[in-house]
Amino acid sequence: MEEFKIIAPSLLLAPYIKHYWFLKAEVSDDTQQRIISDGYISLVFHRGEQMNFASNNALQDKAFLSGQSVGYSDFIRTGKTDMICVTFRPHGARMFFQFPMNELFNRSIAIDVLGSPKLKELNDRLLYTHNTQICVAHIESFLLKYLPLSKEYNFRRMAAVVQSINQGETNIRSLAQICCLSYKQFSRIFAEYIGCNSKDFLRIIRFQRALYFMQTSPQITLTNLAIDCGFYDQPHFVREFKHFSGYSPSEYLSICSPYSDYFV
Image (cartoon, rainbow, N blue to C red; front, side, top):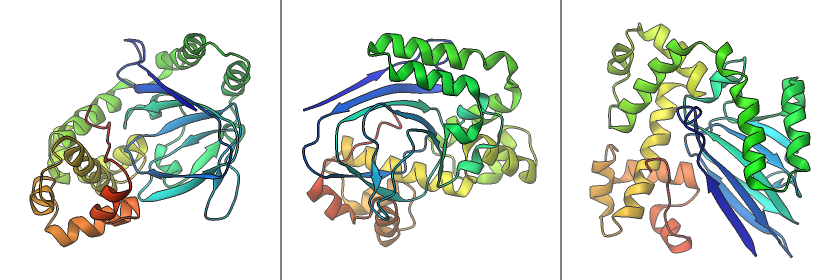
């Protein structure tokens, strides 16, 4: 049995947080799950059994901050799952952590390594709080303490850039002009806030757009899908899709239903 719940953030935190999700599941045997690039940075808390990386059987940390990634990872659930995840908007996490988000690119960092007593205290509270709404209240109390200390001007610049990317802009120099920065300044600030370089982020969002089109327009042909999502041609689309998911589009559709919540 699996229970999955998504909760929206408060109005004060909505510009920075997409949502919180809670997952509980009882697993009687090894269950493998594939995680693909979604464009977000996440703060994850395991209250049940951690997952193993299928590639090397290494155990996930009990609580960690996970960065942007280009590709996919396979995990194995071997016992009771009880997870809480704070999903930041693409440019939101930098407002709460005092280091550039690109340091997390293709990796995660345990909260013990981050050296934040308040974050460890939050983790302890969540471990022993079973009411979902109270868990959210604890998380938001932690996050709200950091907002008065944050500088908003670069956040607002990146918010405008992400909005433009979501609307289909792909020219990096045009994106730099949106926030009145030189190409070099833009590249540095973008990586600091978004967690990867602009080229990689554009690839992630293009892949998510393809998933979204496959989800909402199931009759679309692969050729039209490739054109509508900004790929050079159908072979380019297939190569990128396989890079991000591990499957060709046809293989993916035979295994599961396409899903993306990025544009929702």
